[in-house]
Image (cartoon, rainbow, N blue to C red; front, side, top):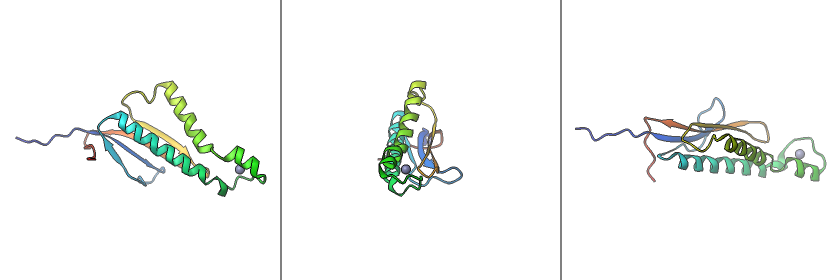
Length: 124
Ligand SMILES: [Zn+2]
């Protein structure tokens, strides 16, 4: 008698389109846990990106204009995406998620959750 069971897992990762995931890929049992991890990853991405706004080549010559118009733009984009998704009910049930976030240089990173019936949740 086999004791091997395949439970499946929600897999969480991020990558630039056409590239393999750059960071860690996680697998968890509960969708709520997957969503919490994905949200945390997206928030870190946005905060790190916004911290780099000093180096942005946006054409602003006035430092005050630059700060008020450029700082926090990736976080603002993320907040808008999350608010829209929550209004639409996209994030309140077990479902695949795919969210593209553009950084301040317009490079897009896709943050995703997908169900994989062959995966096993990570041990922690
Ligand atoms: Zn600027």
